[in-house]
Image (cartoon, rainbow, N blue to C red; front, side):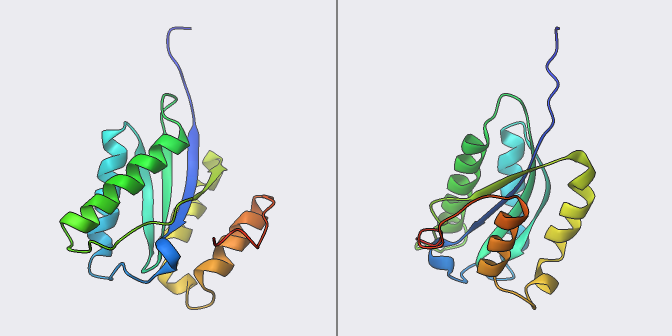
Length: 149
């Protein structure tokens, strides 16, 4: 077969270090756009990006040549540098880890809507409750003693 065909869709979630609410609402659209640019630089597509002052959600479509670990390293590292240099936030950091949840093509529309509705969604529950719910939905076992460390 002369071509490689791959559908790698990931709903990625990560927070700021210590879940600090440091991403101001006026910075968010620029940060989301910058993260989308990093994805494009690595031949990925950011189908949706959104979040709140303490976390971000991305829906990424990755090429077969790019691992989710590499995509997260590039997006988190590049956006952190941008926050330091362009936004004047030298203390900005993302949490060490991330959540990456594979989805199928039939879930794209619902995931895009979910990411777009973050502000409304977080009127009812905080990031920690949201993240635990996503882990449970994807049947991922976790130890609550270590999840926020």
